[in-house]
Length: 254
Image (tube, rainbow, N blue to C red; front, side, top):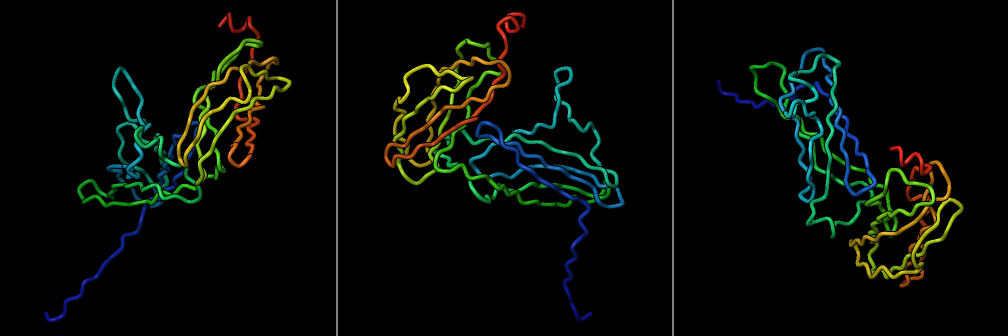
């Protein structure tokens, strides 16, 4: 009657959650969220959502289009049996207004959280399970080269174009030129030593080059050099991409 005591009970967590980031050739990301029921009872998953930094947008990839309607890949089931699991996939992109000034990530970076609403019984109140998201980004050095456009298949001895994007990851202004060197399977077109312009920290620039492959098979694109004239530093990009080179007859039949 005279003693009041507040007790806080932490419920046992029935879910095991693993997250993994996948990089693409572009600046966007794919997030994989694996959820498994590690308890001996059924768990109902009410909702799974992402809370990301403001500069990111995300698109769930957990639906398929059937007869003009988007259907969940997990069907109508909202529960997980004991030891059962499921995988959620999301496509993350930097907002267009932030893409030009967004600097590449390096080291361990906080990327928001995954929020899971779950319950053990249909009639009870749902509980929130929050999983922090962290991404270990590989360092790209002072200058990052990425691909914006590349053909899947090219014809031997026929010119094609590739569009590259370079990003200044350093803290200094760069003055850049591009040089191309022919290799046994690759021939470059155009004037080597073209001026690309000045690049302030965190900014990017795109450029298109024309080349030709003279050998069949999967060919690595090599011989590309970017030179920062301010500090006389050369950045070599050998094997920056690969293309499948086919004979001209195969291309005509396709």
